[in-house]
Length: 275
Image (cartoon, rainbow, N blue to C red; front, side, top):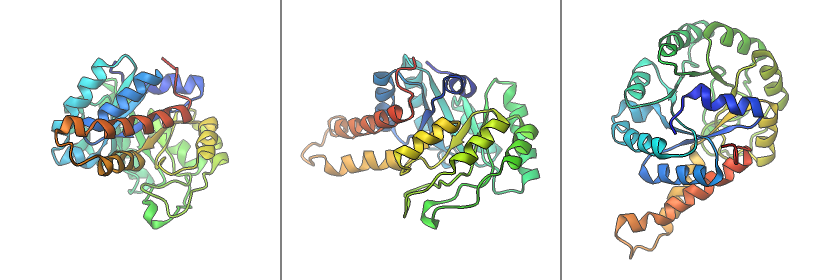
Protein backbone atom coordinates (compact mmCIF):
# COMPACT_ATOMS: atom_id res chain seq x y z
CA UNK A 1 0.00 0.00 0.00
CA UNK A 2 1.26 3.43 -0.91
CA UNK A 3 1.73 5.76 2.09
CA UNK A 4 3.35 9.13 2.66
CA UNK A 5 6.68 9.83 4.31
CA UNK A 6 5.47 11.07 7.66
CA UNK A 7 3.03 8.17 8.04
CA UNK A 8 5.67 5.48 7.49
CA UNK A 9 8.03 7.14 9.98
CA UNK A 10 5.36 7.73 12.65
CA UNK A 11 5.01 4.06 13.55
CA UNK A 12 8.79 3.60 13.62
CA UNK A 13 9.21 6.59 15.91
CA UNK A 14 6.50 5.38 18.28
CA UNK A 15 7.81 1.80 18.44
CA UNK A 16 11.56 2.43 18.32
CA UNK A 17 12.69 0.83 15.07
CA UNK A 18 14.04 2.24 11.80
CA UNK A 19 12.52 2.00 8.33
CA UNK A 20 15.00 0.78 5.69
CA UNK A 21 15.28 3.06 2.65
CA UNK A 22 16.63 1.32 -0.43
CA UNK A 23 17.86 3.17 -3.50
CA UNK A 24 16.69 1.35 -6.63
CA UNK A 25 17.63 1.64 -10.29
CA UNK A 26 15.59 -0.88 -12.27
CA UNK A 27 12.65 -3.26 -12.16
CA UNK A 28 14.72 -6.09 -10.67
CA UNK A 29 15.96 -4.10 -7.69
CA UNK A 30 12.39 -2.97 -7.03
CA UNK A 31 11.18 -6.57 -7.22
CA UNK A 32 13.83 -7.75 -4.76
CA UNK A 33 13.06 -5.04 -2.20
CA UNK A 34 9.30 -5.55 -2.37
CA UNK A 35 9.67 -9.33 -2.06
CA UNK A 36 11.75 -8.85 1.08
CA UNK A 37 9.29 -6.37 2.60
CA UNK A 38 6.36 -8.69 1.93
CA UNK A 39 8.13 -11.73 3.36
CA UNK A 40 9.25 -9.86 6.47
CA UNK A 41 5.99 -7.91 6.92
CA UNK A 42 8.00 -4.72 6.98
CA UNK A 43 7.30 -1.13 5.94
CA UNK A 44 9.82 0.05 3.37
CA UNK A 45 10.95 3.24 1.67
CA UNK A 46 11.91 2.86 -1.99
CA UNK A 47 13.88 5.85 -3.18
CA UNK A 48 15.75 7.20 -6.17
CA UNK A 49 18.56 9.72 -6.49
CA UNK A 50 18.07 13.26 -7.71
CA UNK A 51 19.98 12.66 -10.94
CA UNK A 52 17.54 9.92 -11.96
CA UNK A 53 14.82 12.56 -11.89
CA UNK A 54 16.67 15.22 -13.85
CA UNK A 55 18.03 12.84 -16.53
CA UNK A 56 14.60 11.40 -17.36
CA UNK A 57 15.49 7.96 -16.00
CA UNK A 58 12.73 8.12 -13.41
CA UNK A 59 10.07 8.54 -16.10
CA UNK A 60 10.58 4.82 -16.75
CA UNK A 61 11.47 3.72 -13.22
CA UNK A 62 8.72 5.50 -11.27
CA UNK A 63 5.77 3.64 -12.86
CA UNK A 64 7.40 0.36 -11.82
CA UNK A 65 7.86 1.54 -8.23
CA UNK A 66 4.33 2.95 -8.13
CA UNK A 67 2.80 -0.30 -9.37
CA UNK A 68 4.80 -2.32 -6.86
CA UNK A 69 3.75 -0.01 -4.02
CA UNK A 70 0.09 -0.16 -4.95
CA UNK A 71 0.13 -3.96 -5.14
CA UNK A 72 2.06 -4.44 -1.89
CA UNK A 73 0.27 -5.48 1.28
CA UNK A 74 2.84 -3.61 3.39
CA UNK A 75 3.34 0.19 3.65
CA UNK A 76 5.58 1.59 0.91
CA UNK A 77 6.76 5.19 0.57
CA UNK A 78 8.24 6.42 -2.72
CA UNK A 79 10.94 8.93 -1.82
CA UNK A 80 13.27 11.34 -3.62
CA UNK A 81 16.79 11.04 -2.20
CA UNK A 82 19.05 14.11 -2.08
CA UNK A 83 16.79 16.29 -4.18
CA UNK A 84 19.18 18.90 -5.50
CA UNK A 85 16.73 21.78 -5.62
CA UNK A 86 13.11 22.39 -6.54
CA UNK A 87 13.26 20.97 -10.08
CA UNK A 88 13.97 17.34 -9.11
CA UNK A 89 11.40 17.65 -6.33
CA UNK A 90 8.77 18.71 -8.85
CA UNK A 91 9.72 15.87 -11.21
CA UNK A 92 9.53 13.36 -8.37
CA UNK A 93 6.09 14.61 -7.37
CA UNK A 94 4.89 14.36 -10.97
CA UNK A 95 6.03 10.75 -10.94
CA UNK A 96 4.18 9.77 -7.77
CA UNK A 97 6.64 10.40 -4.94
CA UNK A 98 5.04 10.46 -1.48
CA UNK A 99 8.13 11.75 0.28
CA UNK A 100 10.72 14.32 -0.75
CA UNK A 101 14.22 15.05 0.42
CA UNK A 102 15.55 18.46 -0.51
CA UNK A 103 19.26 18.80 0.08
CA UNK A 104 20.53 22.33 0.48
CA UNK A 105 23.21 21.27 2.98
CA UNK A 106 26.05 22.76 0.89
CA UNK A 107 24.59 26.23 1.45
CA UNK A 108 25.13 28.21 4.63
CA UNK A 109 22.67 27.51 7.43
CA UNK A 110 20.33 30.45 6.82
CA UNK A 111 20.05 29.73 3.09
CA UNK A 112 19.55 26.04 3.80
CA UNK A 113 16.73 26.85 6.22
CA UNK A 114 15.05 29.35 3.87
CA UNK A 115 15.07 26.99 0.88
CA UNK A 116 14.00 23.96 2.89
CA UNK A 117 11.16 25.87 4.54
CA UNK A 118 9.90 26.92 1.11
CA UNK A 119 9.76 23.25 0.08
CA UNK A 120 8.02 22.29 3.33
CA UNK A 121 5.40 25.02 2.89
CA UNK A 122 4.63 23.94 -0.67
CA UNK A 123 4.56 20.20 0.00
CA UNK A 124 2.51 20.47 3.18
CA UNK A 125 -0.45 21.45 0.99
CA UNK A 126 -0.16 17.99 -0.60
CA UNK A 127 0.37 16.26 2.77
CA UNK A 128 3.88 15.18 1.80
CA UNK A 129 6.61 15.27 4.41
CA UNK A 130 10.07 16.63 3.70
CA UNK A 131 13.45 15.28 4.75
CA UNK A 132 16.19 17.86 5.17
CA UNK A 133 19.89 17.69 5.88
CA UNK A 134 22.44 19.67 7.85
CA UNK A 135 26.11 18.89 8.27
CA UNK A 136 26.91 17.79 4.70
CA UNK A 137 27.36 14.02 4.38
CA UNK A 138 30.21 13.52 1.94
CA UNK A 139 31.79 10.64 0.03
CA UNK A 140 33.39 7.66 1.76
CA UNK A 141 36.24 7.82 -0.74
CA UNK A 142 37.31 11.05 0.98
CA UNK A 143 37.60 9.29 4.34
CA UNK A 144 35.38 9.06 7.39
CA UNK A 145 34.07 12.57 8.15
CA UNK A 146 34.46 14.19 11.56
CA UNK A 147 32.40 17.35 11.00
CA UNK A 148 29.34 16.35 13.03
CA UNK A 149 25.95 18.02 13.30
CA UNK A 150 25.58 19.87 16.59
CA UNK A 151 22.50 19.89 18.80
CA UNK A 152 22.22 23.65 18.42
CA UNK A 153 22.33 23.45 14.62
CA UNK A 154 19.71 20.71 14.58
CA UNK A 155 17.30 22.65 16.78
CA UNK A 156 17.70 25.86 14.77
CA UNK A 157 17.13 23.97 11.51
CA UNK A 158 14.09 21.97 12.66
CA UNK A 159 12.47 24.99 14.29
CA UNK A 160 13.08 27.08 11.18
CA UNK A 161 11.92 24.59 8.57
CA UNK A 162 9.28 22.23 9.99
CA UNK A 163 10.82 19.18 8.29
CA UNK A 164 9.29 15.76 8.95
CA UNK A 165 12.72 14.11 9.33
CA UNK A 166 16.30 15.28 9.67
CA UNK A 167 19.42 13.70 8.13
CA UNK A 168 22.36 14.30 10.44
CA UNK A 169 26.12 14.02 10.02
CA UNK A 170 27.26 11.64 12.76
CA UNK A 171 30.15 9.77 11.16
CA UNK A 172 28.85 8.21 7.95
CA UNK A 173 29.44 8.97 4.27
CA UNK A 174 28.18 7.79 0.89
CA UNK A 175 29.86 4.87 -0.90
CA UNK A 176 32.25 2.18 0.31
CA UNK A 177 34.42 3.03 3.29
CA UNK A 178 38.19 2.70 3.32
CA UNK A 179 37.84 2.13 7.06
CA UNK A 180 34.77 1.30 9.10
CA UNK A 181 33.05 4.43 10.46
CA UNK A 182 32.52 5.05 14.16
CA UNK A 183 29.11 6.60 14.72
CA UNK A 184 28.59 9.35 17.28
CA UNK A 185 25.87 7.58 19.25
CA UNK A 186 25.70 10.08 22.10
CA UNK A 187 25.36 12.91 19.58
CA UNK A 188 22.42 11.10 17.96
CA UNK A 189 20.76 10.74 21.38
CA UNK A 190 21.32 14.39 22.24
CA UNK A 191 19.90 15.62 18.91
CA UNK A 192 16.89 13.31 19.13
CA UNK A 193 16.14 14.46 22.70
CA UNK A 194 16.20 18.07 21.54
CA UNK A 195 14.36 18.02 18.20
CA UNK A 196 12.02 15.05 18.83
CA UNK A 197 11.41 14.32 15.11
CA UNK A 198 12.69 11.17 13.33
CA UNK A 199 16.39 11.24 12.48
CA UNK A 200 17.90 9.82 9.30
CA UNK A 201 21.23 8.06 8.81
CA UNK A 202 22.70 8.29 5.32
CA UNK A 203 25.53 6.04 4.16
CA UNK A 204 24.21 2.91 5.88
CA UNK A 205 26.18 0.62 3.57
CA UNK A 206 29.24 -0.75 5.34
CA UNK A 207 28.37 0.45 8.85
CA UNK A 208 28.97 -2.40 11.35
CA UNK A 209 25.78 -4.07 12.56
CA UNK A 210 26.41 -3.28 16.22
CA UNK A 211 26.64 0.44 15.44
CA UNK A 212 23.48 0.33 13.35
CA UNK A 213 21.61 -1.19 16.31
CA UNK A 214 22.97 1.45 18.69
CA UNK A 215 22.01 4.23 16.26
CA UNK A 216 18.45 2.94 16.05
CA UNK A 217 18.24 2.73 19.84
CA UNK A 218 19.49 6.33 20.00
CA UNK A 219 16.78 7.71 17.71
CA UNK A 220 17.57 6.97 14.06
CA UNK A 221 14.30 6.12 12.31
CA UNK A 222 15.35 5.85 8.63
CA UNK A 223 18.57 4.36 7.28
CA UNK A 224 19.62 4.59 3.64
CA UNK A 225 21.17 1.70 1.74
CA UNK A 226 22.36 2.32 -1.79
CA UNK A 227 25.91 1.14 -2.46
CA UNK A 228 25.56 -2.32 -0.92
CA UNK A 229 22.25 -2.92 -2.69
CA UNK A 230 23.98 -2.17 -5.99
CA UNK A 231 26.78 -4.60 -5.16
CA UNK A 232 24.34 -7.33 -4.13
CA UNK A 233 22.69 -7.00 -7.54
CA UNK A 234 25.83 -6.64 -9.65
CA UNK A 235 27.83 -9.38 -7.92
CA UNK A 236 24.99 -11.78 -8.68
CA UNK A 237 24.68 -10.60 -12.29
CA UNK A 238 28.38 -11.29 -12.87
CA UNK A 239 27.97 -14.82 -11.54
CA UNK A 240 24.93 -15.88 -13.54
CA UNK A 241 25.56 -18.56 -16.18
CA UNK A 242 25.97 -16.77 -19.53
CA UNK A 243 24.18 -19.66 -21.23
CA UNK A 244 20.98 -18.16 -19.82
CA UNK A 245 20.08 -15.46 -22.31
CA UNK A 246 16.34 -14.96 -21.68
CA UNK A 247 16.58 -11.88 -19.49
CA UNK A 248 13.65 -12.74 -17.21
CA UNK A 249 15.35 -16.06 -16.38
CA UNK A 250 18.80 -14.47 -16.18
CA UNK A 251 17.55 -11.98 -13.60
CA UNK A 252 16.07 -14.52 -11.16
CA UNK A 253 19.27 -14.86 -9.16
CA UNK A 254 20.04 -11.11 -9.01
CA UNK A 255 16.49 -10.42 -7.81
CA UNK A 256 16.94 -13.07 -5.12
CA UNK A 257 20.29 -11.53 -4.12
CA UNK A 258 18.68 -8.10 -3.67
CA UNK A 259 15.86 -9.70 -1.70
CA UNK A 260 18.31 -11.46 0.63
CA UNK A 261 20.25 -8.24 1.16
CA UNK A 262 17.06 -6.32 1.93
CA UNK A 263 15.87 -9.02 4.34
CA UNK A 264 19.12 -8.75 6.29
CA UNK A 265 18.74 -4.97 6.69
CA UNK A 266 15.04 -5.15 7.55
CA UNK A 267 15.84 -7.54 10.39
CA UNK A 268 18.84 -5.51 11.51
CA UNK A 269 16.72 -2.36 11.82
CA UNK A 270 13.95 -4.17 13.71
CA UNK A 271 11.40 -3.40 10.97
CA UNK A 272 10.29 -7.00 10.48
CA UNK A 273 6.86 -8.13 11.68
CA UNK A 274 5.61 -4.54 12.03
CA UNK A 275 2.62 -4.94 9.68
